Length: 258
Image (tube, rainbow, N blue to C red):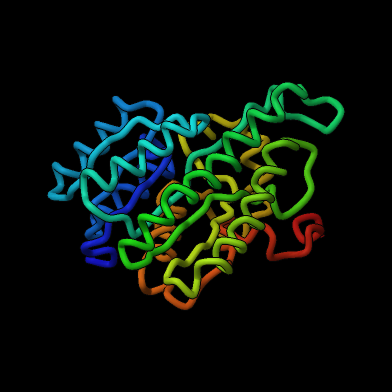
């Protein structure tokens, strides 16, 4: 308990899945949490759950595609709690029916995927960093993906955006590390969130065959990684990517077949 005591944290995409698990966990560890999500009713439910458990939280509607909405989220954190120490850029996703191969994808969707995943992360950092500096520093955690680290058949635009987040993370770490702000990224593998399930059993079986632990990932698995990177326990970790994928990339890809 108390790993984020007296800190103020923003968690985006916090109404469900990884974001919800992270907001609840950070609050349990002492943070005052801004629960930001497009679904503000669900965000209020999460904030209510946190307060019901004795924590402090406020809900704010966030449209990650709208710069003014991102500005408003950071402003809300300042108005509600007077500071900002942790920014967890968790919001993102894609539409796999439109985000396919380079040639096959719906080209009109490219800008949407980039804005939803990469631009929203960049702009949230741009807005939050001045407040974090005024608060004495802190930690930024950005959500990338396993698809940013290896090739695949799809989703191309999403993977490009998530790859951009890795490069951007290192730039923020380089530019602001000496000023007291660390910036790291998490690259989740398959995590059984409401959005990720139900998945065809064949897909689950394929992931199970290539995972070096005897279960699929849950939102809490990523939440604990985000908590660690946000806490002072990770004070000497900066500009890194933590893969939360059950060991998916740790072995020779032929191992399951051999």
